[in-house]
Every structure is written in structure tokens, then in C-alpha cells.
Image (tube, rainbow, N blue to C red; front, side, top):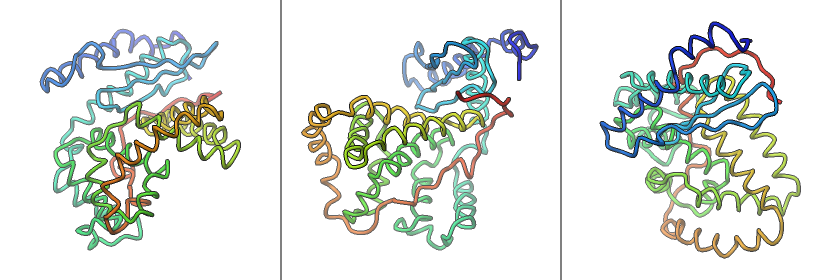
Length: 301
């Protein structure tokens, strides 16, 4: 556990790792002409009256990382989060982190060997292995961080029960993959997922609080191991949003908008045959671990 004036902390002060991270992404955005450089990297400090302090940093595209160390100040937590994000950003630039035909072949074989799938299923999107292979092929040329950003959408759809609903409608995995590979997480999507959880709360009182406690615990555990955090953080935010509206009046006001949204996003699948992606999404972190350093033990309270 590092003290407030440790040599390690002074080293990162001298390096100005926050500035280095911003410069890294500024240079990438200028090359790609993707967005304004002023708000490239977004920091979120978690309110706390005393240490340990926690901070999350969100990169362009949505990838999120947090501090590993037990931090005695908000500034220290910010620097440590930037350090982890910078390490992963630079590591992500290595050739081995880009999706190529060779990478796809290796990943599919590894997935087949660690699941009940068969390598011969790779050409059939109706199978779990085939769905995973298709997702990789659709993202050929992208980096693992970019792929993780897309995978987060499918992880949330699976967690939220949307993929199960598509399966029950007998829509094809291939169509679902193609459609949602083009979608991005936004406030509208979060609101509708929050509505789904509000409806579950009506059936099972207390479910939201239990799920939120679990999500907070999972986020803390993932942060302490240096993992990419967006999936866990989105779960926490969606459940928090749902819990903040957990009363009859708010729930009633959501229903009309929810029906129009479902018609808009699901109508094209009604005539489809086959199975949806349920239980077929493979966590890419299992086959391409994010680079991080060991963490000091710290309290999650």
C-alpha cells in the first residue's frame, strides 16, 4: 500500500501521466479526424469523505479504466487511473492486439477448446462458435479495445434479457449481430434498459437493490484487477437509474415510450427464423487479456 508521499507517486507526478494520456489520444484523433480534442478523456471521481479515493477514466469510444492503488487523494486516484488507461492504450497499439485472419483463427480455436463448441461450427452463425467468429470477422482490422466496445453492447443485451427475447421471437443470430454491431450505447438505450429492470422490480420487490449491490461489488473487483470496466460501470448506472425511478408514477410514464421503442427496434426481426445470440457471446477478455500491473489491496467500502 503506497503512502501519500511515496516515491512511486512522485514518479507519476513528474511524468504527468494525465497529460501523457491526453496527448496520446489527441494525436490519434488528429490523425483520424474523429472529434474535438478538448473532451477526449473523461474523468469521474467517486465522492468520498476519506481515503481510499477512486477515479474512473473513459477513453474515446467508451473504454473505461479505474485506479488500482489505494489512493490518499483525488489527484492521486486520477493519476493512477490515467496510468492504467495509458498502459492499456499503448499496449492496444501492438500488432498482436489487432484483429486479423490469423488472430480470428487462433481465437476461434481457443474458444472451441474451452467450450462445448466444435471448430467446424465456425462457418455457421447459428452456433455459439459461429456467432463469435462472425463478430470477429465483422471487426477485422480493429483493435481489441475497439472490439471490446462493441462486445459491451452484446454483454448488456444478454444481461438485460434482450437477447433472450429475440431468441423467443425466433430471430436469427446473424441478423441480431449485424444490427447491434452498428449500435452504440446512449442515454436512450440506457433508459429503456432501466425500464426493463423497473418492470422486473414490480414482479420481484427488492430485486433492483440486490442487483445494484452485486453490480457495485463486481465493478470494484474488476477495477482492482485492472480490467476494462465499461460493462460493469454501465450495469451500475442502468440499475441506479432504474432505482431512482422505482415508483408507480415514473414506471407508468415510461410505458408509452417503451412500446414505440420496441416496435422500432424489433419489427424487422419478427419474420426471421433461427436462434438469437443468447449464451453465445464470448468475453474477449478471456482470449485477449488487458495489460495491467498488480494492485495493492484496498477496501471497497
